[in-house]
Amino acid sequence: MINLIRRDLIIQKFQLYVFIPCILFFIFFGSHLSAFFIFVFAGFFIPINAYSYDEKAETNILLNSLPYTRTQIIASRYIGAIFYMTVSIGIAVLLFYVFNRPFTWADIAIGVGITLTMFAFAFPLFYLLKPGHIGTAVTIGFILLVILMGPVITFFEEYLTPAVNFLSSVSTSLLYLSSVGVITVLYAASWLISQVIYQRKAF
Image (tube, rainbow, N blue to C red; front, top):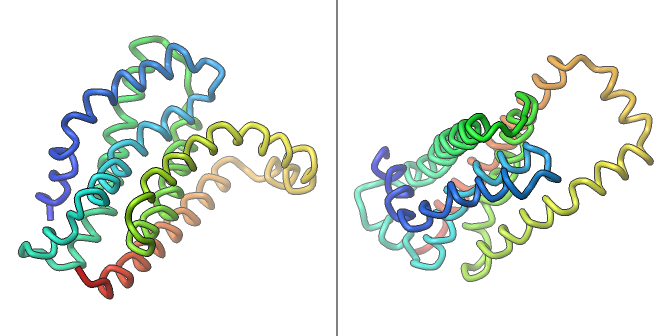
């Protein structure tokens, strides 16, 4: 299964050449963006590119001809996504330090949480929907998220004052622990859903 995780890096060797330049672009020219948006982009880059590549190349036919079970194939996707997200965000943090761009641990935590949540919703779609435009749809969704996040947060702060006040009254540690629990459940449920869908697909 480790070889399946490594494969995602090997097939993207050309896309990886633009990974660091993209992060640097956001660092230098995205001063209006919160740091966590850049961490989301960094964590999102490799796993979603891998899915998009497989969608175009119909790699699942090849994978199912290899001595791997479908359970292992799905597991490599979800474990690999966490691994590559962690490495990518680590690289982004290093670049933030090198170029003196301010960020906080909260930015990293929020970036990780949003990225894992997006994975949880996006991954089953790659197995549930017909191939062709899923990668494009997910990418557009990410861009819209970046653009609309600010207005959405402002809307919630203005019109959902009681909820905002409640969240403000909750201790930071409890809020983080609750978020970790919710995201873990979402990711596990997504893994299970993808497993069920993939087991039933014909390649």
